[in-house]
Image (cartoon, rainbow, N blue to C red; front, side, top):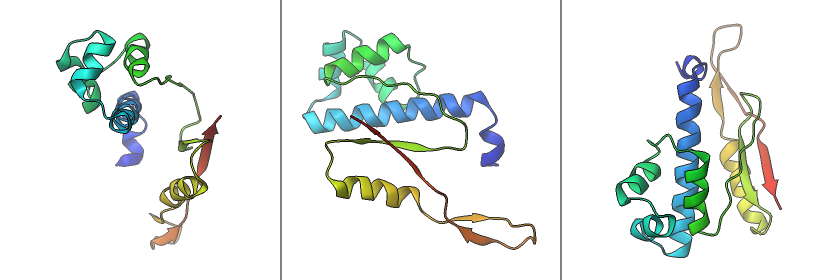
Length: 131
């Protein structure tokens, strides 16, 4: 079912919106800021911030950058082949943070081999870093 969902653009739109919302919320938490602070700083209505942070918004790149600027951040957009998942890791993060990301991306998953029985396979992660 997930494989079929990934064939539709709506899946990728929702995934991108959730990734943006998660990243922005993490930075707000790090800076000790509230949604109200984000709305005021970006010059948008508080309900717009709530929608953006829920991952339900179809934000423009301009709005994404206005929100990111409040937490002194930049929006990075990249295109990668489907099936390759990556995670941004800050170059300044301690090595254990990168190890934790790798550990999370290496969780075993069930696959169906040609024989029809399930076996455990470990996907190879792609860890992207930014400088």
